[in-house]
Length: 457
Ligand SMILES: [Zn+2]
Image 1 (tube, rainbow, N blue to C red):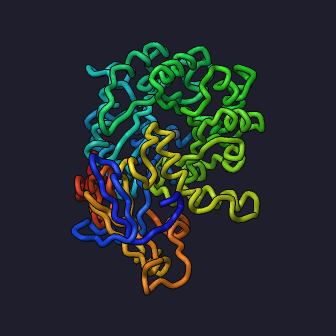
Image 2 (cartoon, rainbow, N blue to C red):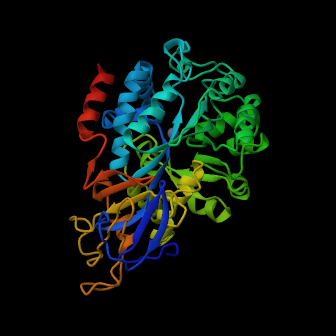
Image 3 (tube, protein in one colour):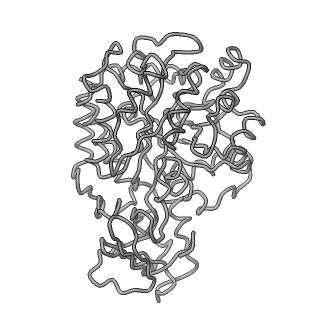
């Protein structure tokens, strides 16, 4: 199957968590039948799990990005490793229900209140890795260096929990994290506000030594650009470039307020740009130049970031629809291109290049979108998709006598479906969601309710 091709009745054999073969037009036999449109697992390339506690609450009374951040800090101030495990397990289970098979967790809540190290200095990161295991998904823990409150200012009370004191101390702590089958470790620079220029190279060198991904929030707010220009005389993108941090292993998150030179630097270095449209619109950040950075050479990925919603179909279509509003022109990306950002390019930005495509040798991550929900019915009337461990079938309309009109599978997925239409999810060959029910966390809403009540108390 070529990329973007829609085929009917595909038997997918899985061995050791990977796709062993794909055969179109096969009989399902005793395979698990996946009824609907089957796409690769989705990669949520930018997440802060604990922000889930802010959903709804931060919509009261307006406010700004900076007042939103104060509310977020109140949640951050209270979390313990046990509470974080319970909360993140529920949030990652919500992601699994939405078809997300890998999360990039941009993790900066490292230490106990006051900045005191836990007995295991990586207790919070370990809680996130364990939470992903319990929810059945993979994680790239993007352990985040966070040292200052602003350009030259020391961390405030809450930020003491984020800070290791120096780049070297950050590197020493992060080196203690062990990778597992479902977990890889990457680096992050919180932002040029939070990491002084003379520490950027330490983080970059740590990641380079390990060929690990490195992510950074870049130019989400104009105030960050102004502060950076005042402190260093260059833009945040230029500062990262000057310290060797841009390149194919790097992801710039948001990249909302860029100069033409910034766009050339990001594209020319093949740095991925991660757009988080539902968060960017929630926080009134603005619309980043996704079209321009991609044209300049940057792959695109997508993230739920603040968890205002967890729905990568919504992130994907929002990127296109934002661009339509900005330019008053349609058709900036095809549905296939938008899905590629949500799958293959997202996984690659998290250091899992073997995931996010339906081909032999790839990790067997499969997401089935129901095509008989009120949102999707009629778009691909003939699809009978089948799947299982040992075999998975995915199907298009071409072999069906009921087929009417051209198939619109990817278009339906991106422009009409929501995360609620995800019926089955296979991660690494293991069925983690079956007919809308999480197989490891059967009551995800209950788990969220319980975890959030504990955080609020
Ligand atoms: Zn973020």
